[in-house]
Length: 283
Image (spheres, rainbow, N blue to C red):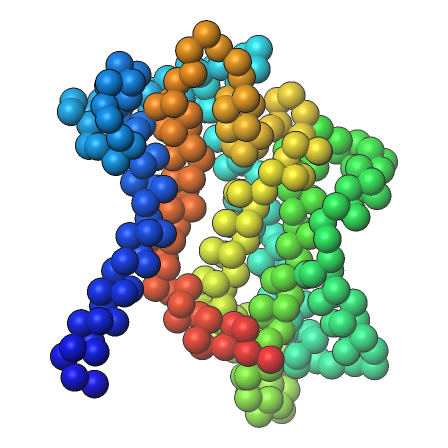
């Protein structure tokens, strides 16, 4: 490949990257302006003359989300309380399921895996009514723990798919040798399989964190007044009527809602790609 071809490829990639990142840039620069500057400047792309975080402070602690004017802070912490246990439990269950379905096959295991796989591609709307009934029977309606249960059950199909496809690539001889040495089901899992699972664990954690944090459907359907996640709070903030529409506050709120997933990808994005290439989606 000569220098001209390489230059053309890099130019094209940079243009695509700039086009993709343009909305993020507009959100960021708008959130750092006050309303007088937004009204006076000629374009969305103009840099702020005097950057300030007033819109961020208001979005966090004083913006109105309906009748409440406490900002996004309570919604943010609700999402944290929901996401962390849901990600941990769904990843753990997916690892165990994948281990069983790949290395401890039994009669009907392929059928069971096919049924679990169906859950990974099933439209989420079809589970709303039965899930609401189950949460009512368990006394977990309108609570954060109810949302945790919903996301664990829904996410388990995807995590099982990830781990099962990854574990298929591990040599069966490792399991057979451990069995000959007297190791049992759990000892093999903890001492042999799990230490080899770092790439797929990272992939699954990032995938689940992003999916659960960004979920709106379950959050708006199953959450109560004190258990609404950040996505519902952001929607309420953006749709709250006021005398003057504060675009800087809306943009700052959107940035706050997106910040955790951005941080996760910036910190662990390279491990996500490595995990995928190590066999996370290999059939």
